[in-house]
Image (cartoon, rainbow over all chains, first blue to last red; front, side, top):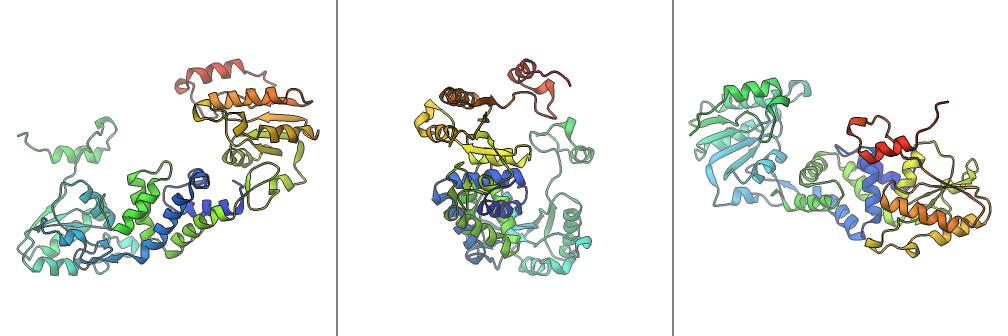
Length: 199
Length: 199
């Protein structure tokens, strides 16, 4: 779409974001043109400051503005429960549920030989060290429910097995609000395999 | 979702954009965190420069970086054909089709008494002036196909009627690739009313 160069430039920059195509980018650019200056200013500043103000938490390796992060510092959280995730975004998603009151550990990805990600690329040694302190009683492997996440969960559990710690994996099953008619066969099969007794 | 403040700030700024909710904003923020610095820098700069570098074209009132704009300056375009749109985004959408080789005129909105937009808030006087020069032979009213756009097209056509100019309105009908089964009744009715002879 041909527009003025400053708009084209913004549209091009927006299109590099995931899930934003030509139409969405154009719509966002015209929105910003019409919006109060503060909207664009705050967005521009937030983007500029993002990487400058972010560090890794030395304990859980989450992205934070102060290490250790707020979750690791929180005395109300149960340090015996450690939830292992691939990425900071996964941590944020689990924490947003409000269902988990333990600690986290960010591996930094999942095993993926095709992408050149082996055990050395993940923080598995740091995880072993963390568990070795003896405070953690259960490690919940909350890597993604896909082939890489499963392989990673399996590998991490093998590495941690020598230590005196319970290893668990998040449940597979039907998503809430899902429709059996449209669910894939593997998910339906897993939701049958993993069925639970009704209390 | 609780994350580090610099991420929260960016998520909050992104959520003010249309069509971007909590989940999309979080996904975009984590993408920017993981992306090369240039991606965020270019986006931030494009946003910052957007309003500074944009002016209104004195002829068509489109947003441009130089007035008159590239479309108005283009000698290959037909000045006898004037397409009247509500907003610059509409102009860009029509121009992107490559089907229209005339000139444009941006009204600056549509009549909407409920939002306090009357004829004085639109550039109707400027449009009358433009048509009065006598170069324009046909005015295509390409305001949006909704109640406000229809009312605006009707009002503008009444205002221009004293002048020696042909007035047309963009066609209503079924969108290409649409499905009659799922189309609304009014559109189906209009696509019947506006049926054309097959060549």
